[in-house]
Amino acid sequence: MVGPEQAAGSEQAGGSEPVGGVRRSGLRNPDKAVRGLGAGTMSLEALVLLLAIQPIRVVGGDLSGAAIGAIVALAVACVVLAGMMRRPWAWYAGTVIQGLLLLSGLLHWSLFALGVMFALVWAYALHVRRVILG
Image (cartoon, rainbow, N blue to C red; front, top):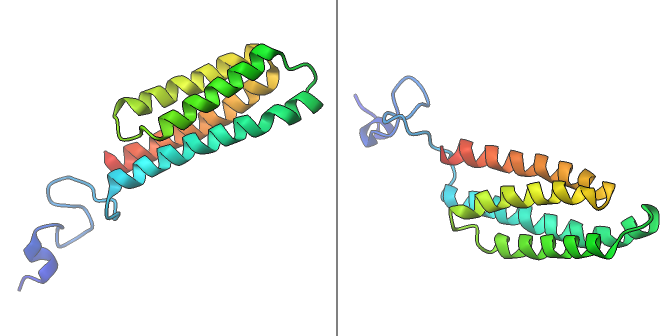
């Protein structure tokens, strides 16, 4: 006797692996969930970058105008990119932004520290995207 689950042909009788080799994430709309993760990551990065300007100036010492300009430009790029996560190239652009933030560490050491932290967060977001979407 075949149950309703097996009749639909979505899973094998003995386990949770799908028949066609396609892994289901359990999400109703995995594409939208992954886009939300990317947009949220970019938005959080923009917010942290903008809020970090004053503490870096007070505690970290000399923060040049070039460093402040780089922070603001990266934050604006993060906000724009957060709104464009539907585009497939946006994920590559997010990786480029992480590299630029690491490179801005040449202007101030604390920007390199922020770059390392957000590069790790972005790497995790890319990992989650690969696991969910395949």
